[in-house]
Image 1: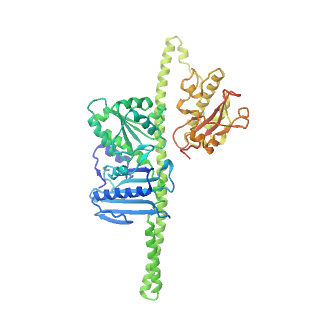
Image 2 (image 1 turned 120 degrees about the vertical axis):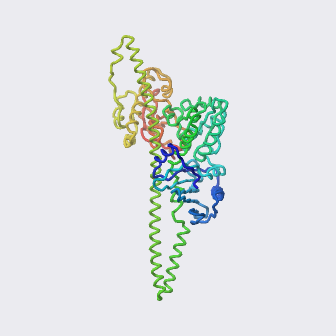
Image 3 (image 1 turned 180 degrees about the vertical axis):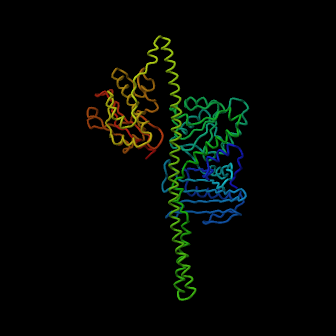
Length: 590
């Protein structure tokens, strides 16, 4: 039952401690883009029926709750739209193992939104496996339900261009470009494993384990295996995110290929560990695939909105029974039987009202739980990003400290010890956006023309001091760039940051975008958002399109942007900042 085996090792005990109180063992959410809704429901029912039959349970897709075996029940519900087409279906198999003190609950849900969702999703299929344990019972090691693999085989499942397959996908040099596009696709939410063939000629054990990994993460990830030739091309394209021979790298969502800080988010499992400790190592990789899926909340279309806790048909039967009881009472009101029926009718009415109230409360609690899941995922995403940023900052700090010590030694050896150990007077970075805006007029070649109120909204967030510091460094880099332009520098700001002159402030070039995408620039509403104020000396009507921007953050729902216009070659010789605030609308957020 539950397709599980008991985990005896210390790793299992540690995992159980982390999961205390949470019965959810697996969650697989399959987005369907290229299929009609009838195909989705028909295929899901067919797979579900075959899976139940393989377990020895009868399959009857009729709404209601039925007993299919000792200690085993199956509930099934379907919902329909006003036009008669199917809206959703949900099946839940509950298997009780009293001797082991646990109950397995497998839920399969399929639903379609009213209109295609973001990314063109036409339907969703979700599989959830829960293990409800009696107090003190050990957490078992679970394997994904077998029906997941068949669902991915029979339905056109895709996540950000990535196929979800139960076998490793081989990638040669010609497929590297497509793989990089998948890794960097902002629509991808599931992790991707990129594995590189070992240098040793005998790597059959590695191949077998890689195949097992692909089967274990089927539905929540895909495994790509690079040939040696493809590895060279891949590592040239993703210099900060390379993968060595025999290693496996887990690529989470939102890969930023130009960011060394981002590389810390995407962990590498070395060949040495995969070879010496294959069991624990591949279990860790399996968890790397499933943990993001567990964090990921179900879309609302799969929740209480589409599936009330009591099936509408059941409500109809209950209300029909109540109405029948009332009519019977009316006919036999004068008899003793009528009095009993009247008492029963009142009790039935009261019970029905209470059931309606409890059903409404349960629906509200489920919606509240869904909101908490969404907040939990957002908090975890922010935590992961903060850890990666902290790791990168710590490495840069260590490098800077070493560099300072080397310079101090060189100056001391050159008889300039006084200069080597002198403490210069340094300006502290602003701790808020308000402080940044107040300090900005001290710069000679940068001015702010945007709406101060929009910028100050950033101060309401916990990362405001970090954003203020980045904005100040960006403004100083723009000021140094404008100053050099006056002196004859003839390149743009991004090139200035890529190959900076000595003694200037810069920002990482990957933070700089000198134009918006064509889809944004061609969209009238999005373009209007970027028509920002400038002096009449720059443009007579007082506004200009500012596609150039600096990314102060590249993750999260706020992701602040600083939009600017470069007039260093114009009449003012200045940089005009027309906007500072949360990320403006794009085709992804629209």
